[in-house]
Amino acid sequence: MRYGFVIDQDRCIGCHACTVACKEEHQVPLGVFRTWVKYVEKGEFPHTSRHFGVMRCNHCDDAPCVEICPTSALFRRSNGIVDFDNTACIGCKGCMQACPYDALYIDPNTNTAAKCNFCAHRVERSQEPACVIVCPTQAILAGDLDDGGSRVGRAVATQKVSARKPHKGTQPKLFYIGIEGDLLEPARLLRQSTHVFAERRDGHAGSNGFDARATREVYDVAHPAPWGWKIALYLWTKSVAAGMLVVAALLMALTGESGALFNVVSPLIALIALAVTHVLLVADLKRPERFYYLLIRPNFRSWLVKGAYVLLAYGASATAWLLCGIFLDEIPMPLAWLTAVLGVAAACYSAFLFAQARGRDLWQSPLFLWHLLAQALAAGSATLLLVCLLSGAAPGVVRPALTVLVASVAVIAAMILVEVLMPHASEDLRLATETIVRGELRGRFWGSVIGTGMAAPVAIGAFLLVSGVTTVLGLITAVLALLGLWYFEDLWVKAGQAAPLS
Image (cartoon, rainbow, N blue to C red; front, top):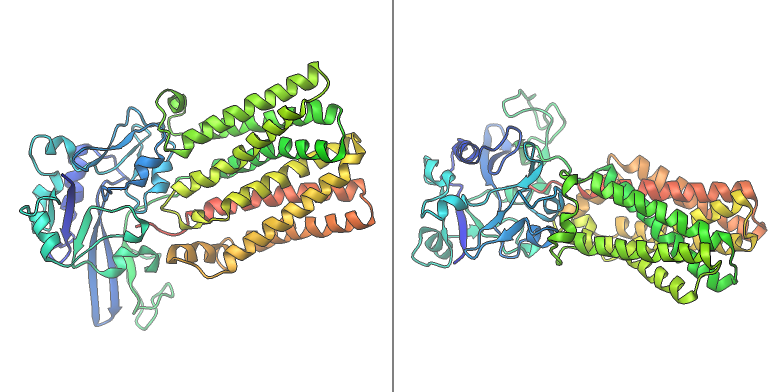
């Protein structure tokens, strides 16, 4: 049994009865929607047309929201309905990033995720969903797709149907008859600042400069970006936390140096940065008081859960390092290497977490893991360089630390430029990179990231390696590199959410 929807857009009149019925049935608050009707217009006067698209959860057979949910608050019923339990939700918003269809939202009353659940309570009573009952043109069909005798089964078998983003591999169970193709690919639509009934000037371009012959989105509901500066800052502080002891272990092995810098200062900085990372992760939850659900009801398919355990293991190992440094005045190399391995894991696990955010094409890059590793090396070496230059401790570490910093920042810059300038595999990826390279983020990208944050520290650092390290220029190099990493993390999180999902 696989319950699904078929929506006949040839019958739909855009009346929003389904939206109103859904809101009433589930007491959906103002400003958020489980189902909504989107309008687009295309053509040039007098040959124009308006098209409707009913948007909602696709109840995917391979639902990425179920996979990423750290507490199994989202789950798939035996009848194929993807349902949710808001008493288990911690409000991490990972499901919103994983869904390619913008189907989930945060309920402002409960601060938990919510979405269409196929009116599961009605289905259990052998009733149809509320939206099906109220549709005046019978444009919405619901039922068992595996039953060839059902209306939805016959419709899928005998008519030409389309689904949204089948290339995502989610196996959606929401099918459309007669839908305008541009409604299935939101990245292709032109967005305008005027409203659905606003006046437009005559001619090929409207008052906002859009080509009047293109397909224009004229009515939709708001879908704000779920993740913001806290997630970007978490990536930055985690790079410092993980990279500090990875670089420390590497330089201890290469230089033979020891002392308070490696024994106490390095693990102390790593633990402080790790604590800030944990605080940021908890603070970004919509239900932060439930953070411990990650441990008592974990979904081990989610990299949110796996990452939490990696961070805890790294924190324990870093604490052992600090205690050895304080009480034994030396760090056993097996402990140093174990901590370094856990540091690499702590730095890189986010690549798998972001890969589970299947709705965001920019974050699916196969290079992202190597980005995170290089960022940890850059952040760790820059922080270590700052400590050495400001305190005068372990002067023999300065040059090796600067070498690691210059090399890692150069690698980061090369990977970034390859990714943003190479051909794009999807329209969403093209839109995201256009936002970075030529769009609203271009000034920060070319100026703050590539110029100030990467080219400058590489050039100054290379000069210092040839001519000799000076305190002022060394400090400038380290600070610029750390700022460049922060600007990049912030830009990467924003740009990844730039392409519309619905």
